[in-house]
Image (cartoon, rainbow, N blue to C red):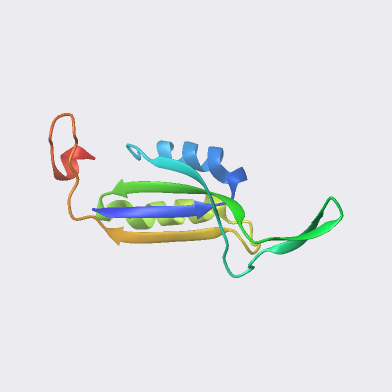
Length: 112
């Protein structure tokens, strides 16, 4: 199993969520987050004072999926989330050693 974390633009949240459910993802965690990448923010004026805005709003999707579905989901996320502009986001993939469903104590793929 793999954990797929995708950090995307907030305006892509609903369409990406629906596309993931349509791709038979059994569940996901979605959180609104703030961060910065290569752009390191920009300057804006607030009440006449220059302010450096270096944290950008993003949405984080976390999924745990079978190894065989990872590439399909990466392609799906890229297709949905890409605008071609700086700030489209990132996808992180890491191994998951074990999953336990608290209610039933099932383990492994049965717990996902």
